[in-house]
Length: 314
Length: 270
Image (cartoon, rainbow over all chains, first blue to last red; front, side):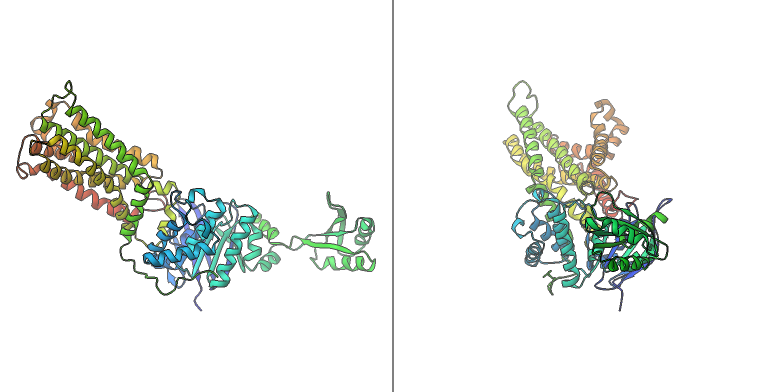
């Protein structure tokens, strides 16, 4: 099966500045790939190269089976929500989508129908005749996603789609991203620096740092590979705190136990080097002492820990 | 359910330049910018027509010269409007961050340039349409209206094409509208500069060469020869060489520059 995206050592340089170096990865059809990285990691450059806005300085790639030497053919098959996309304030949402549908080859009637359908799907049908100038940031992002879908793309690139949105707006956009993948079967490449988004919707993750690929895999693979748990946070009833501390302190694999700042009943257990299994003894001891554990989480095992570890290392 | 496009998507667009031009014309005219410029243009022409036709103290011009002066101002300002619109065409989109979305469509850069150029030229055509009643009013009784309008549309269109192309080239290489408009206006002033030379400097072979080689001065000189001196069309047709050459060369260069260098960042960069 042809990968939806396949890159072989693509790089992009601006003079002596390396924006992207030797990026090699592939994405299967229907996957939602998260591209993570701090600011300046090369996420936007990678998307601009893959969507033919920028020419790579080195390497090759194909999108939806079309080689990078045919940029116009690639543009017909991809939908893109660029980072910080601008919108013409004096057009209505419907006019905006109608124009882009026409540019992708729809007839007038078909473009109008397509615009109306997409506006309904992104929840903007009641504002379709309003000027974009009056749209909120969240509405503009949803309009941008509708524009990215105007040509029924096989691969959708979303560059920081939730940037600057309030939590409700973020949820709406993420729900749309999920629907693009599940209902349309499109491949989605989601660039973001919000780790929670990736954990929520992505099947695989790339971590970029300073233009280089630092890690690739599923969320759990990356979290496991990057950082073994170093501590565990647990919560017990307030009246059991002292007994829980003593019990845990006496368990093998636990170095020391400290109360968590400002949280009644919460404790942090620092583990020896042998990893998450070290906590099992402690939990067993708590169970034997009939101390109920209300909450428990290994710290250092989350994607955010892995991300920090990998980006700090390089 | 997220919509799929269905079978009626045609991947060969019939005339993408026409779709771009239609949208640009909507933005220009329904957005109000074109109407505002047209209004300012008509106010300017009204003042000139008033001064040349009704004010006894200032009206020292013959009727033919009044028509000539009004038409020359209309051509100069009308083609300036085309230059301003073209200078905004690419750098404006770049500044407003709307260019990337357009570049992500399968429309070629050449078609994009063509559509934007047509919209810019519409300002000249509108300016010319506004000029018609003024020329008719000033030219009554001297059998000049037909000649004036025909000369005006030919010379004005050549100069508007030249200046709009110049504006487009500058716009492609500019990252901001301010730079694009400033540079375009500076170039326009440089082109207009010979018209401000003393009349003694415009005589002799060197003076005539300067007038002939400059498309603006040559075009306006040709209009004057037809309207004021009463020459025939082909008597001074050699004065049209530089406007024709400038319009042809600059429109071809604008097309090449647009096709090759319209990018997210200015010209060479991306």
